[in-house]
Length: 235
Length: 404
Ligand SMILES: Nc1ncnc2c1ncn2[C@@H]1O[C@H](COP(=O)(O)OP(=O)(O)O)[C@@H](O)[C@H]1O
Ligand SMILES: [Mg+2]
Image (cartoon, rainbow over all chains, first blue to last red; front, side, top):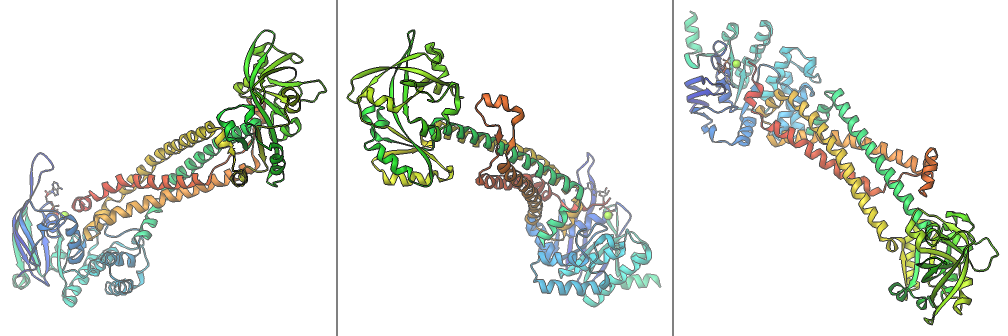
């Protein structure tokens, strides 16, 4: 049984007079420990798909099943709690609480989980070490570079011990060296901690790093290539 | 940590927070100060009434309270008088003879309350002697002197030195009359009082009434009005057959105006707080709007809406209470300082004296007003927090975070 099952999900935005089909009958399974990139040009539906999987928005039709549970059955606060316990989020920007230090940002999510103070502190420091920010523990987001902020966001995403991490264009605001470093970090966490990552990007250098690449075009899945096939393709 | 977050959030936009803090503090300070001035004026008015004729505590027989007949005099009145005078909390006691009667001039007549007093003692118990406009308060060797109000003198067409005839019932209910000569004319701020009351030397009354020296009213002046309740209870215990009343019972209209005043002042503070409410709501709304993305992220990663609600509530609360404490502190210090020093109103002295008001004004504020205010501020803060909080928890994370 797959960790994430997206079944014939469509999303139609009706905000304007012309309805926009951001997703069109998308079906996709993501297994535990995968390192998947959702790619496609801007406007192809990447964010919409990640929002559906993350329970930040509801599909117009179709179902999302995570850990065998249809998440459309959750009420708003149940969904928030589900996200807290199961999903780590990294967004493109504005991830962190500006008035908190790096450590406080990482701790905050564990506070929401009602984890004890000692464990919070201990785990926050461990995680910030893991993302190579031991020396920035007491820095506020404004005192950190864009890459460092995203690393804190990754640390925070892991702090809640989620089943998987969703990252929507985590490297969009980073230069290529920093982007590569972030991918190194994510890959390391995927390999060492067996953490499942689903991230979106339209940066070809980042796409190369994925173990599975799902390409969206106009709200439909255009291609879905796994690592062994990727390797085969490169040969 | 929620509390720490709220505190840090408040100081994120220092300028904005300081502006609203200042507004709250100034609003409350001004409000408290105005209230204290109103209370001060009211107290001055009450004091004027007490001073003029009421005194702090009066004693009568129960029968007299029902029917104001001279026959309902206080048995052994003069020995009770002497006994009460020994109490250290009491400044002076005046024994009065009260008779309802008729005052006549050659041209007119009218019903009056004849007040027989010992002039020396009376001028300590009340300040009626200060209201003399013409003549003196019994500083004379004339026979049967009388002091009347300006209003009555005008009504009867009498002047200083005129003769006036009083007709009244004796203790044995027979009618008697006697002629008096006006030696003083007073004018208080109450024209009704001036028309209905006239003062005579009580020692002049006894021979006319062919009576022993009886008194029907004991008026007590305290050293300090704060001892009102304790002296009152001592007297009611000792003289349970008599009826003692404090000025509050004697002049219920003063108590009524006091309650009305308090109500008005509470409404006044309410209006100030309502104005502040809009300011606070607006500030919080701006602050929330600035943080839409952040709240979106917080709710996305798992912060429950109730917690977000509380975060806004706490921020609003801390801001309001903080401003409230500063404002109330400033107000309390100002009032405390001026309640001791007073405000010199001598620039307006002429006008005020005409109204029988003192030229020195002492603002004052009962402690419980601060409690009322604290509760009002808390309520204001809660109401102010509701709209911004609702705005926040209605945010849909997907939309709040979206960076196109
Ligand atoms: N809230 C919305 N209202 C209306 N249209 C939307 C909304 N969100 C996304 N869209 C549209 O849906 C399509 C997919 O958008 P999105 O998922 O953001 O794509 P991507 O993340 O790949 O750039 C776009 O055409 C976009 O304009
Ligand atoms: Mg996007």
